[in-house]
Image (cartoon, one colour):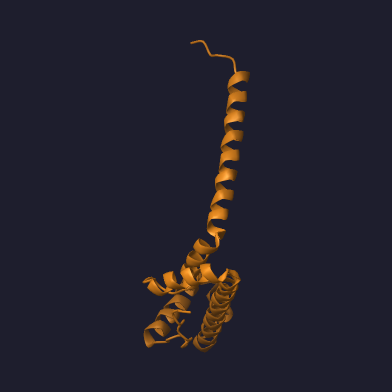
Length: 152
């Protein structure tokens, strides 16, 4: 099964430019409220705390994204292996000739094209759309019958 590897987390790249931008931000916040500058300064983080906070948030976000991708892969692989042998062989041929990115979204698109899930979902959506349009037309017809003609 082909897939593009997701790059490993390498950490946040902290530069002197980022540090000076952070210092300017702290100063702007203090300057915005000159009467409370001391209180604002006491509530602000220092650069080391901010770096560790950013690193932690970045690591957690990256891990959540990786977990989401892994869940998608597992879900679609189970759908792929649930297909009969003939469909799976045709799907595999198509996947091997696929020139787009090998990610879960494209894999879902390919597998659902072969197992019929995409067509079933589209059929359901078309049916719901048809029912909604009929209801709207009925409501408009009822409103037109209830309103007297305006003479002008």
